[in-house]
Length: 150
Image (cartoon, rainbow, N blue to C red):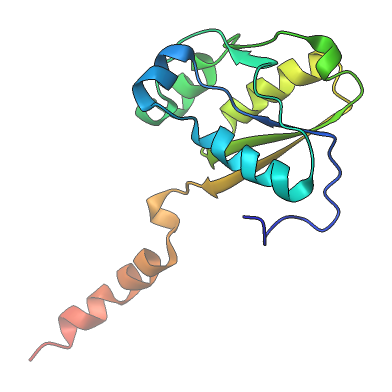
């Protein structure tokens, strides 16, 4: 991830997407915080771990449809201290981008708290399995494999 960082990444503060305390107890770690911590050390920027919080224990996004995901996270995040974000360029970190709902909800809250800008960075992105090139190629040529049999 560090090798893939944009050359001119302008940020004052790194913020991991927070987990609700109940989810954190279950998982025992916040993967977004682990990523943010390493990036903070590399970029020599502070990491805010307590100013953006998840107030609502929502269903995991992975278990929901796209329309349910869009509703699931409404008003789930809150900023504790708006001064922490006032005028700052925030780098928001999440582990996986699926629909962008989590990052969008966090960005809205950070902008409302006065952040000058919010840039999101994720380690991975999910894609529809029908778009995976190997599957497309295999589907195109499946008929030729079948007809080539003696």
